[in-house]
Structures are given as structure tokens and as C-alpha cells.
Length: 395
Image (cartoon, rainbow, N blue to C red; front, side):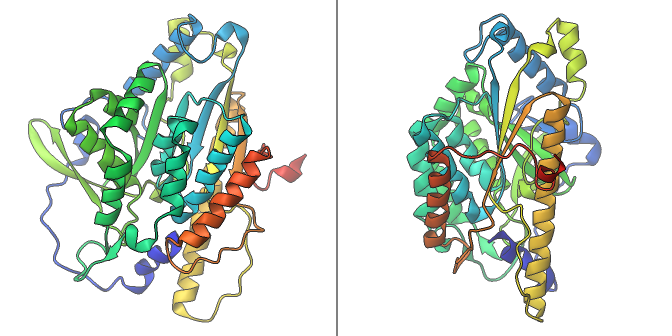
């Protein structure tokens, strides 16, 4: 599980190796830096993005005129959105839930899909619909730890080598899949992945559909690197470096697991001022009806566990608690966003009744069990929770 990787922060902080020379981008150039010369393909969480706002206004204008392929404003149909959390191997639960949802015949076509960490692997496949469910099952039930990472010695910037994971990403995210995503992007659907810029300590939101629509080898390379970065747990996995250009100079950015800054995300903080932009375009926001479905690949309930009086056990339990608390806080943010915009909030998560019996970080037996659990729950009609944990008892 992810918490075991973070133990190195507590137990092995004194180990260091030779550092490579970096040419990090200055903070004042962050917002203007381009990757491979590509423009308007990403935004920093917490800062309004004019390009992202323009894009969303154009999408809603298209829908209001009845030109979109998903709903007509006059009919008050629903705009469906999906947000998939981190969780490492526990992503098997989300993969199973999506597959079971397809089996039930009630899984909608999502206008917007976001993913982070293990959710960054699931999201592009889920974005393309149920015809790719077999890939989700294969990715989250077939492979073990050795198929994802290998211990590296000597330690330099991480304890593991992610070349096996890179090969899996190259296998599942090929030019054909990117072309399919490009087609959906041009229909007006959007796919976003989050990474953490470690220098800036900020979440970076990538417009993966726009990257896919560029369609060349550089775009495919960047598409894969963003997914790898989002799933790269710092210290355990090496960071992913992106060369960027600003003011006619080349710099590097260090990107790691998006789950460091957010366990699940949407776009509300980069779309600040969105209501005003809609009014300026004459779009009636009151006609927008939407539903957000959040898949948390983890628990929300506190799970009792007797902790041995041992440094490693205490550290593991402490980090596990921190990550769980962060994840729940992110759920509350999304809930408040939907309530502010009069949206429909829906949450799924691993039930407390499931007790993990994983014997390694990526245990195919445990992952198969989680996949089957998610599939069974969703195929029978998942009981989506309408509030985050702790609020269910307030009514």
C-alpha cells in the first residue's frame, strides 16, 4: 500500500546519494512555461486560468445552442462528471466498480473526467467508456509488485526504479488510445490529470484531451509522462522531469504523485470567475444541471488496528492516518462545490467491512478481491452516498 512507501520518509531520511545538476525554472516564470512548445495545456490549482475558463464557456455555449452531443439545456438533462482518487493498488476497487457499473447498464457518458495518482491510470480508460473495461481489469488484477517497480541500488533520488511501470504505460496508452481520446475531445468532452510540481508545491492540472488532439510523437510522450508523474510516489519512485521553455531559455520541472497535494480533484479553483464569464457570454447558468460521481479508492471510515510499539509500525500508522484525513478533506471540498453550484454529489468508497490481506505492495490476489468487490457492488446498483463521511448523520 502507498503508506508503506512513505515510511522511507521516517526511516531512511538519512540515506543520500549523488544529486544530478538541475536547472529549475524560477517561480516568476512558472505560469508562462511551455512543454514542447504546447500552449494552454495545463493550469496551476489555486490560480484562475483564463484559457480553461474560455474553454468551458465555449463548451457550454455549444450545449446551449443544442450543438453538443450530450444534452440540451432546454430539456434540463444532466451533465455527468467523474472524479477518480488516488490509492495505489486500491485502484482495483475503482476499476471493478466502473466495470460493474457498465454491467448494470446505468453507467453514463461523462462530459468531464478527472484522475490523480492511480486515478490517473484509470481515468483515460474510463473516459473512453465500457468497451475498454477489460483493460481496467487486466491492469488491476494481472500484475504484481515486480511488474510495476524494482528496487534500485545505489539510492539516488528514489528507492525504486519505475521502468516496469513505464513499460505498462507504454502498452496501455498507445497512439491508438490517444487518437480515441482526441476524437472525444473534439466532441466537447474533457479529460484532466493532476500532478504535483514539487518545486512549487502545487497541483498542476493537465488537459489530456488537448494534448491527445495534437497527435504527434511529442504529444504521446508527454501524455505518458504526465500519467507516470501522477502515479510516482516521491522517494519511493523517481520524480518525472519535464523540460520547459520560458523567455527563450530551457528549464526543468520536477513532477511527482498528484496525491501529494490532492487525493481527488475537480476544476473549481482554476475556474474562479466562471459565473461572471458565463454572464458576459449570455449563458444562463441556472439551466446547468450536473452530477459529480466521486470514486475514492480507499476507506473513509477509521479502522481500528492495534499498533505495535515499534518505530516502523508507528510511522506506518501515522502516515496512513494523515493520507486518510487528507482524502476526506478533499471530499468535503468537492461536496461544498456541488452544493454551491446546486449540483448532485455522489460518492463511492471501499467499505470498512473489507479487510486487506495484501502480502505485498501490488498483491494480485488482494487486487482481484477488491476488483470483484467493486464489480459486485456496482453491478447490483451501487448505493451512492450523497454526503461525505460525518455529514450523513446531520439529517
